[in-house]
Image (spheres, one colour):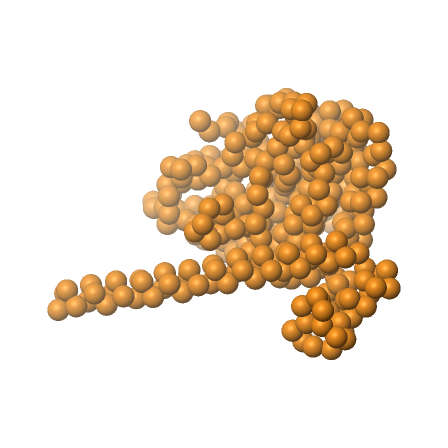
Length: 364
C-alpha cells in the first residue's frame, strides 16, 4: 500500500518552508520541497524536463518504485537501477526506461548473506543523523562504521543521543561519542518532546534531505514524528531485558515535512558491513592514518614491525590500542569486501561475454 503524498505536491506555504532568494522571501516550488537542487537541474534542460518531468523515489517496492514530482504521483515498474532518494526523469510512454540522474551522494553497504553484493541504502542525502540510545545500544565501534559510511558518501554526519533520562551517567556517553571525530557534532535530546525541532533546526532547512540511521528502538521514527508534529509513523517501546528495539519501520521511506525538507526513515540495521569506504575510514581515524604514513615500511601492519610510528604512539600513551584494533578491523573488512565485490563483477563480466559468444555461434 502506497502513502498519499498529494498534500505535499504543491509549493510550501510561506513561513513553513519559505526561504530567502535574492534578498526576498519566496515559496519553495514543489520540486524544491522534494529536494531538487541546481546539481540535478544542470543535468537536464527545460525542454527535456517538459518531456520527461523530474520525479523523486520515495519508496522502493518489489513491483517497482513509488515516485513523486510536480503533479506526479506514480509507480514506476522495475527497470531503473534506483534507490530511495534518487531523482529520475520520468518517461510517461516507457516508465521503465526513466533515466536516473547522477547522484549527489550515495549511502551503501555490503548486503547481508554470502553473495557479497552491494545494497543501496539512500541517494542524494545532505545530512545523516546517526541515532543511538544511552543504554546497551551505545557502541563506539558501530558509530565509527556509520560515520565512515557518511564520510565516504560525502554526507554530513550528526550523532544524536536519545534516552538520556534512562541512564545515570549521560555525560560519559556524550564524551565517548564526541571523541570519535571532531568533525561530527553530538546532539543530546529527548525524542518525545519539542527538543528535536529546536535542536535539529539548523540541519532541517527547507529543500534539504535528511536521513536517520541506527538500530531498532533508538527513536528514529519518534524523532521524525516530533519533527513533523504528527504521530503518522508507528513506534514501539524497547525490550526492558536487553534494551533492544523492536522493528517498527519495515522499509525505507522518504517523508516530506510541512517545513519543506525531506526526511528518510530506515529500518534498524542489524549488521553494517562496509565496502568501498577506504576514504571514509581514513577520515574517521585520521590521526592513525597520518601516523601510518610515518612508519619505516610502506606495508607496515602495526603489529611488531620495527620503526612503526603507530606502535611508538601507543607506547607513549598518545594512541589507544583498542582504537587501533578497531581501525585495523575496519580496514581489513573494507579491503576484503571490496575485493570480493570486484571479483564478483569480473566473473559476471566474463560470464556475460561467454554467453554472448555462445549466442553468436548458435546464430551462425
